[in-house]
Image 1: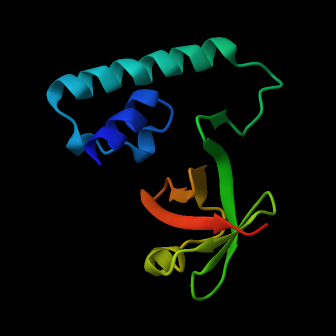
Image 2 (image 1 turned 30 degrees about the horizontal axis):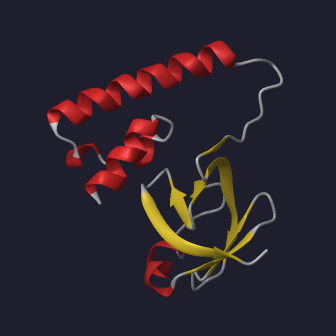
Length: 124
């Protein structure tokens, strides 16, 4: 878990899902450098036609919840995709609200507002 977290943090793109408490002081410095570099790169590459959705290493940001079934088992996103949530994670997803910001990453829906992760399978 620590290695996976470090890799996510070093990507520098999803600071909200990086668990800084799992990092050593040297890892935290490397992560801070990566985040600064990514912010610098984003500023220099921004243009008026920049898309709101970003695609990087199996992760896709820029999504938000359109609706959630009352039991939390089905989550629909703004792009029309429909996700079946693992039962163990429905306790969290049943509380997600429309417009909640979501990152889709390797079979997971990540609520970046509450830093919650739900394993899910795309149905549509």
